[in-house]
Length: 239
Image 1: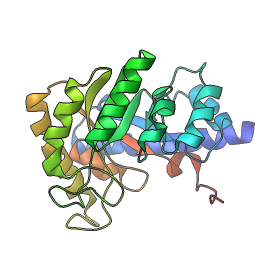
Image 2: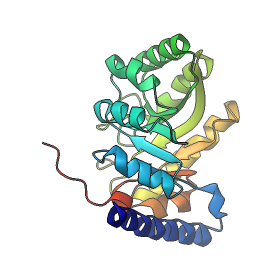
Image 3: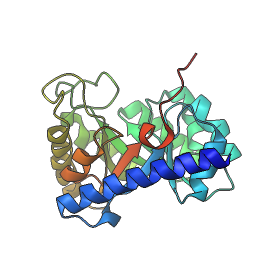
Image 4: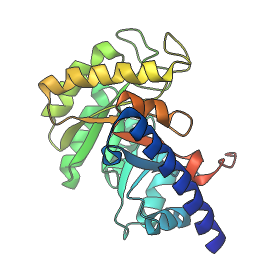
């Protein structure tokens, strides 16, 4: 376990150096950017080590992995983010541990999250997932609502009992006008965030950028970056 802790500490240090350098290049204070470590397919023991190393935000994208891991690590001072496409039949489980759901992309999901948050007596932070590869009213290949649907969906979240509208999230698209243009995609997300904050000033979280493109996200103005591989290593193939 000591070897694994040394490995994670070294990887975290490299990621921290990248974030710090990106902030310096963008003229931003380092404390403006929060690192979320995406721990999918990795065991609870890694989450425990990360917590010992000072990580406070962790993310999962599959409830069947996340639920037992969150339960095993419930004694740790962690903020749990759910970042994957979320089916309504998983909402009850996810609301039990997730502090934030970053993949809110349709009204049916808002209704289900609200009902369950109220039932469990929890407040769940929500990010609207924006699909920059979608037409104005479509959904993206990897989930998300088209830019033209953000305002309406945000309004639903803001009014929903048990939910808190925290901001926006995107994944750099593989198709469409922003394919291969990560910084342009993230700058578009920032424009949408500016629009959103006119109506909802507290919804100032912008989650963008992963291991390969965190620098572009920081340059564009992201407040949170989601990093998995660069911290934990190349993930084992799922059977």
